[in-house]
Structure formats: C-alpha cells, structure tokens
Amino acid sequence: FFVRRRRPPRSTRKESSAASDVYKRQPQNPKTPVNKRMDKERQWVVINRICNINPISMKYFEDIGSSLPSGFSYDNFVRNQFLKENKLIVESTPVKTGTTIAGLIFKDGIVLGADTRSTSGPIVANKNCIKIHYLAPNMYCCGAGTAADCDFVTDMVSHELELIRLNTNRECRVVNAVTIARNHLFYYGGYIGAYLIIGGVDCKGPHLVNVSAEGTVKWVPYYATGSGSLSAISMIESYYKEDLALEEAKELIVRAIEGGIYHDLGSGSNVDLCIIQKGKVEYLRNYVRKNKKEFSMEQSYAFPKGTTKVLKESVVKLADLKIEEVSMPMEVLLSLIHISEPTRLLSISYAVFCLKKKKKKK
Image (cartoon, rainbow, N blue to C red; front, side, top):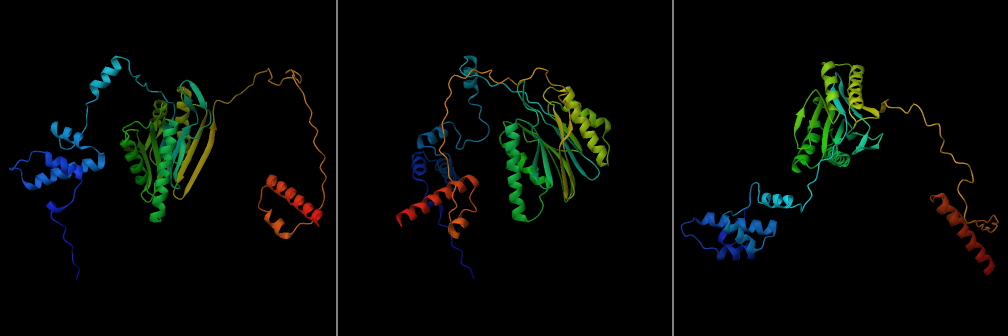
C-alpha cells in the first residue's frame, strides 16, 4: 500500500515575501471568491520569480488594468516614430544576397544543386564556397540568405539530429530536421536570414522540404530559391516529370543552376550536386565548372632581382655545431618517440648536454 502525502492548504503555503506584501496592500473585494484571489496572488508570484519585477512595477501592472502582461505590445511604436523622424536612430537597410539553389525528387531519391558564389554587396567574396550542408547521413540541406546564418543553423540542426540518433539508435527522419529548423527560425521571426531546402531519404521514402526564414514549411516535389530562382524554377517546371532517371535529374538540376548563374549577378562560378539515395550519398563538388578564366594578362608580375633597393644589410655568423654520438638510456629514447620533430631535436640536444655535464662531474 502506498500512502499519498497531502499538500498543505493554499492558505498555509509560503509564497514570495515581496509578492505577498504587495498582495496584502491591495484592497480586497469581499465578494471575490477566495480561489480567484489566490490565483491572482500566484500570478504576482510568477511575475516576481520569472521577470524579477519589484513591488512598485507590479503595482504599475495592477494600475493599468492587467494582472499579467500578455499578447503583443505596441507601446514603443510612437517612440520609434519620434526617434526616426528626428534622425536619432539610423534605420537599417536590407542587404541583397545572391544565390541559386534547387532540388527535386527523382525515381530513387533526391538531387540537390547549388552555385558556389558568395557576395558581400557588389563584391564577390568567395568564388568557390559550399552551399550544400551536411545534416545527417541520409539528409543534406541547401542554404540561401546570410552565409553565417545558414552555416550556424545547419550546424545546430546537425548536432540535434546527432543527439536523436544516439538516443534512439536509429536513422533520423526528415521531419525531425524540418521541425527543429522551423521552430528555431519561427522563434526569431525572420531575423535569421536562412532559407533552406532540406532533402533526404528515410523510412517513408524521399522528401524535399522548403523552410523559409519566417518558419514557413512546404513539402514539394521540386523547388528553387535564391536571387536566381526565377530562371532556375522556370527551367525545372518546363522539363520536370515524375519518375525521372538519375542522369536526367542531374542534367535538369545543372541546367537550372546554370540559368541562375548566367542571368543573376549574385550567382556564379561552379555547380555543386548532392545525390541522396537509400543508404547512399554522393557529393559532387564542382560537378560543372563555369566562368573559367580562359586567358591571363600578358604583363607578368615577376620583378627582376634588384628592383627593390636594399637599405641595410648585416650578416650574422652562426657557431659551428659538432655532432657527437652519445649513448642514451632506453627510457629516454622511448620517451622521445611520441614527440614532434622540432621538440625531439631540442630534447635530444638537452639530454646530450646533461650527459656531458654528468661526465665532467665524475
């Protein structure tokens, strides 16, 4: 038999002193039921514990007619408008990003494709960056938007999936990755610039999912996004059909990414592909190389010797080193096996010095 311990009545429970004092100072309405009054007191305690609000602020909440702050607050709208009109704050302007990523479902799996150009405004920052990110052994993800946001979000999702695999001892499903990414992006309301195309094959078959920066999710047979997505999606919609063969799917994705490369200034360089099948993943880095440098300038950057004037020259003579064979104990030799080469030479020279010093003392 199990004896269940009863909880003490609500009137005898000890609550936060600050919250209790404020509650006692509030005028009590004798017509209000005791249960509602106790619920109100618990609300003050929750505010005090979570928000660390002092009794004066709690009295302010009571005065404005709301026992608990809830919903959306637009109190700062007038303030922000005043600051903006008087130019006391500088409104941030959106930065255009450039990318072309696409994916589609073929007969046996998923094909993902992306260009390799990353931009910083009007400048090409990297000609051969990686836009297809690893999530799990059966899942990969293409990222468009802010490079740092895409890298960190995909790394976070990959770590979470790794923990799920370790805890469940089974292969992760695509819906796991989609749920983690969607909840994380929705929490920040679009301020994380990561537009993802997640592709993978699990126990339910191949799946292709688009997750926007606001947390919107679309389960689609094919998709393209990024600044070059208009050219890419028009190419895919023109030639896509169900049950595509692998080579046909690869060719279609390459043509879609090439459309973004040729018609969008933010996309360029090479084409990366990732083929995901049941129990098999093939990552084709620089599958197609575009915009090759066909020629180089005739003028050479090799300058003849003596072009730069030498202002000062000094020669330092090094002392001659004599190499002597010295017998060393086996313990010292074994201790030097796992030491790197520069450290090993210093250790050997120091050991030789110590042995010579012992011989002189004898």
